[in-house]
Length: 351
Ligand code: FES
Ligand SMILES: [Fe+2]
Image (cartoon, rainbow, N blue to C red):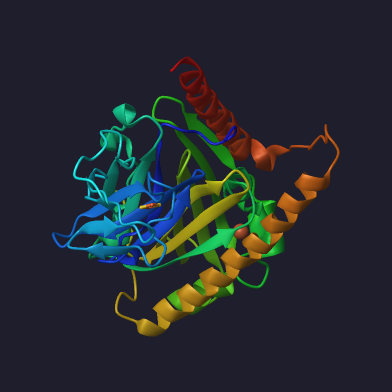
């Protein structure tokens, strides 16, 4: 785990994925077992029995009254990971405890802290309130990526690729042609990349969902909080319409595109995506269209990034990329991620 920052919060799942049954997902190389207790809390412990490492998510392991019983020899654990029963003896070894992960359920996501639990400060988890608030309707999904997470970070911070990779969906010539502005807030740990197109073609993704005809004003304002949460604030409006002095923006359609970028392993990633809109809130057709279209777009990225991962795996040492203006945000993000990963390594080396 060299390039993955530890001592960080990552999205492990949508809250809706976890019910009162065993659910497993690997985050940063660590297999984690989740379930929702009868009281509604989500619990996260290591998905390996301390006895002979049988996965506790694997049948015939099972949940009995909020305790997980290992399907191999019956070691039994509580929600805090502590072993409460061992077959054939009454004494329970002091070390019979599954690692338990700090966990927060917020904005429709289940966040876990990977690394030193003493450093888990839940106030540092970035927010995406629209995913779980009444003024928005959200469609969401997750696609597995067979590529390192930094390739997805690169991809999302440089949307000029929309013009080429997503041509008949969300890309138009103006996206690649319009220069970006980039800002980095080192203190808050956020990279901002903006592209404002004042007179642009409306791509099918927005024409179909908003009903706007003709050319549009299209803003893309990216806010990335490394390592995990990426937000694209997208504003679509008729050409010439402006935000009012009081901050209201009644002629515009707002779409919040959120990605949670969670490393599964060094070379694979969970690509969580969500699209929240502030219009046509009850329109099932619009929801269906946006869900299908966004998934198609995400899969176009997945296909391209899976190819890149294979290319990188077979290339000779020392390949030099060439970066240009469009890469400014991606390069800033890489520097932040490298610093975060470096800090984790120093910690690992000294503890
Ligand atoms: S491996 Fe779980 S009880 Fe033996
Ligand atoms: Fe893309």
